[in-house]
Length: 251
Ligand SMILES: Nc1ncnc2c1ncn2[C@@H]1O[C@H](COP(=O)(O)OP(=O)(O)OP(=O)(O)O)[C@@H](O)[C@H]1O
Image (cartoon, rainbow, N blue to C red):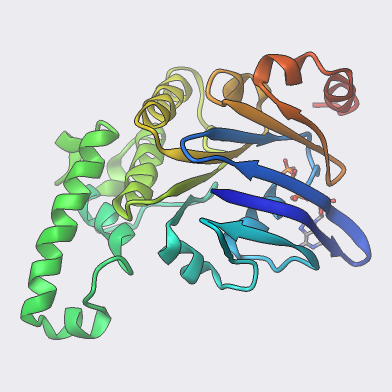
């Protein structure tokens, strides 16, 4: 589904990502891990289109996308949950999720602003998609409450619902567990497991090896911008190169 081939990106002459290749198959959950500064965020941004690659190619659903801007990639079916994503204040949980469906419906902002009949139909469709997504992440009963009152763990679930509302082919998660602890972290892991069981294709970037071990079919390990391991979790965790890369950092 996603093919990243020989992609590089440098900043000021220093490689952040160097000749990285990875594939994500339909229905697979793939995790990219690596110590601080390994190049995970850079790789994520190259895939979403928020950064341009210096070289290499990225294909999605058989189509080359590395020259497309983020919104065009989104339209093809990539949905992103950003690490620092926040909820929109002054909106309900459902309204927050409905924002995720923009771009998917036929009617654009102009007809939305003019409240044309086509827009009203779309609003109903989007509302239904939002309710489905909220149900899926366990937030259905919070739908009409102000989004900013949600605890952080549920805000993360809301962001997942927003991404799901766009009916993605590939869900891209940037460090979904960051800032979560204990029970909240556990709940999020269970949620991602459920989405995986539903057959959704997921690529997640994560700092924490333990968090992804149970979630991922495959783990790709980056160190100093390069892939040092790619395989099933048990194999990757026992890889001497991976152990050395993680032992080499202070945290
Ligand atoms: N916009 C930028 N300008 C200059 N250097 C950058 C930029 N973005 C990333 N880098 C550098 O590229 C390297 C990889 O950084 P990146 O943020 O991709 O790593 P990471 O694995 O996501 O790290 P972390 O886990 O700490 O978020 C680092 O050395 C970083 O300083």
